[in-house]
Image 1: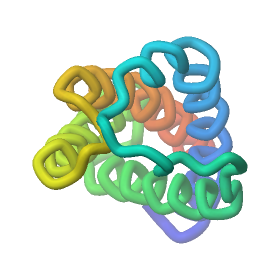
Image 2: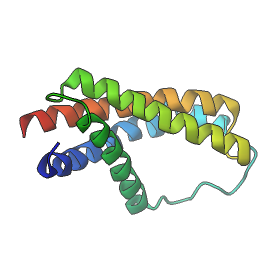
Image 3: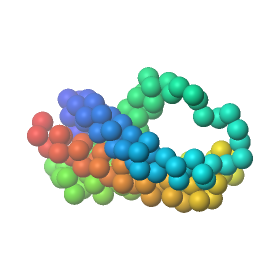
Image 4: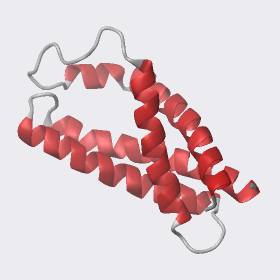
Length: 136
């Protein structure tokens, strides 16, 4: 993946990831997550720092793009879906279980469900990255 492909992939991937993340966590499963939070209180911000969420999402998207770019041959949508889902699942599986082990911010239920949902978001993001990168 060249610099132009990587830059455009990060931009497009960030937009797609933010939209899909909003649909999943703020629309579809918000109540489920609210009812399965850990015992810690005061950890959620009343108003999110959107700029920080965008920066973090862009870095996450860069990881997916780099993993996709490390594959031989031209990126495919199916390949992007697969690589994105694997990266997303592994990143959030590790983070959620580390959080479960050291903090009271989530439960075992969240530690199991969140990486599965994240695999969906990252898979869709990976597919979008592959579609864009293949056209550049």
